[in-house]
Image 1 (cartoon, rainbow over the protein chains, first blue to last red):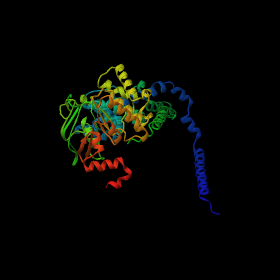
Image 2: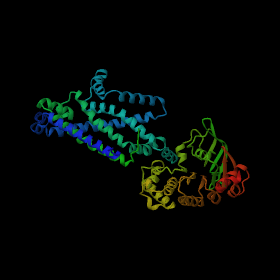
Image 3: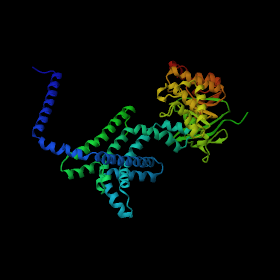
Image 4: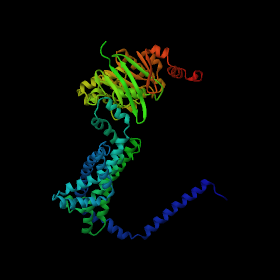
Length: 263
Length: 253
């Protein structure tokens, strides 16, 4: 007897669930649960990690990210305005900057900044400055494009209205265009913040003291010390504590702004 | 009679190879209401936008209240504070409440104090009949209300001339009356107004002078009763026939 279309798709759906269950069972049987528990869920190690993992590592991750994001946002705004400038050299500089720093791994920027700048200019920044500037340089390249798109998404009539009221070009930008642009780009900006949170782990390249450790480096050091994966698990969980609410916020904002697409 | 409010001489405007305004002369006396009518693409909006230099004229001279707008060294921002403009699409600042829409330029451009700016704003909201909407956001208002707020915003700068660029074209028919009512009242108070419009009734009743434009020229101008009631040129006649009697277009051609 031939099945109707609805019945066929029902059977097919059932088979999919079946396969999924089988895969999960196989993984559960093959895995070495004893070792997994010892390696990842060593409660004795966990208890040793606290409170430093919160009050040093998590705190530093947040500080580095916040500083890098703030400086990067300002730099990104400047680059976005340069890219929209009627002055050609400004546009060229902004374009070159954005293409360059978007195109190379953040890791290289950290290396260059930490080892290259002291060699080239005989200056040494402290670690906090280094990580802030390196994150800002990388973040700004991405944020500049987002901000530029946001500025261009503000309707032209808004600018005409502001100019007709006697506002200068600069004042129009500051009081009318940029506030509206940021409303439009809040969701994508939240994504940049999540990316920077993870990029802050690149500080491991710089020899930092114990009080300056952030989550990833803290986790790696603890892993070597205690011979187990538990610290990595904890570090990962703490990243999620930062990034999941941000992701949720981003989705909420997107609904709020009507999911206006910016690209 | 005092000096004229707006004097336009030999105004030309091209967009690339497209010549939109070919040679426009217009004098508007202080307190006069001038309605500009004509088919779309005739250049009437462009001409209006040249008055406050939202469009840069290609040639000619524009003087508003003694200030030459077309002088390259004019302080254009300062000059624009005396020329209010109302747009077809309202263009209220979407991120600001109604009251802030009315105060932002007063405070940042005219450097009025917060209290003074708010007082003037509330007075102008009263003039357009929207006192109760002071704290609303533009998106919460109907089109007609938004346009009245836009008029109040322009009035809050205490302008000497008001420009209206098809102020009712984007409105639902039943909301047009409120906006025209506000404009009529403004005219009665003696405001100098340049109005680009398709509202013939309004032009007929309120305008001191009506300008018919077509193809980048002023084809005909004069008192409203003459231009609309007794047009001399064929182009004016056929345009008016189409506008006033859209269901009988075939009879004219």
